Image (cartoon, helix red, strand yellow):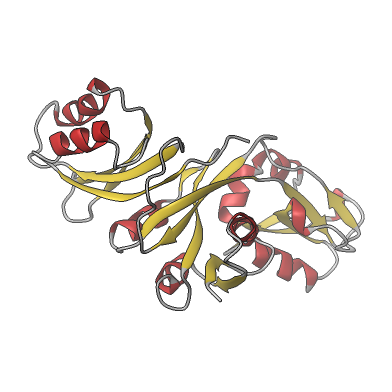
Length: 276
């Protein structure tokens, strides 16, 4: 039975994304949870055939570690999913005024700042994951609370549950599914392609030339993100998402032009997730 790797522990948004991927692709039914993003990526192609990881949040932007790991692995993006992200506060006390400590994953904190500001006397303790936050408050003492995924609080039995504590009611996270084989091109399907471009000779106008190659052929750029190469100061990789499949002639022509002066690697072409 082919398995899917996802970032654990249980009750995280990553596990929920893996469940959604299983529902979309019925041949996958087993989900294995790993404690870190690095171990999740390492499992793909070995213990698991696929991996599901968050790559971009509407509020916080791209998950930089995932971009860096993709660059240095041979894995490809084979699919994407977009999930709503909703948070709740659960506590071992009956009122907000009694809360003295709040467990929250670092990214969750940044997406629930307005609510945290209302807990004037509470100390925020950073955790590695939303699942860890939930585990800690379950084992905790009166006065402890946690910011956790909304879907994780049903039937939780906490004395205090405050729903929808996120700063943005329409918050979303984009997840990608990783595999080792290209997705075949099916005409009529809406695709995205993710690329990494490393500038060749650094000179004025180089980035404009790269972007112009896409514009001249009406290839829509969905996003562009720069990351340091970690080889020298001021040297960058550019992660670019475009609409379309790498097998389409206009995209092949564009990449051929960009590759004349730059290193270009495709991170995969995959079906575009529908908007929520």
